[in-house]
Length: 135
Image (cartoon, rainbow, N blue to C red; front, side, top):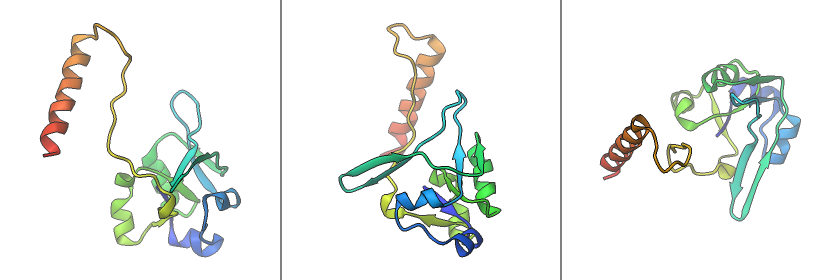
């Protein structure tokens, strides 16, 4: 979800559409492999990504939240990083009607007919935990 501090929004305005992010200071995320995260938006049948620009690129969502709290710009982070800040009014959720719903955590691993025992046991434990917590 896209979030920003009230101070940032007072100075720079609130984007009404994802396209308006091009005129804002966005806090970017870089994956460990070097690729930059493209912000993903969904609304009705519209489904697209935007490569935002900004003064800061980080590889840790917690630091992105800190930067947003400091008024550096708009950050795109998972909701569980910012729930307490949203509830306290320290951050504002932006473009909520464009934010895609995320069903939950996903586990990605290489396809292999004979996965290592540790991976097989771990994936089974995750499946068991998810099954027990969705009832």
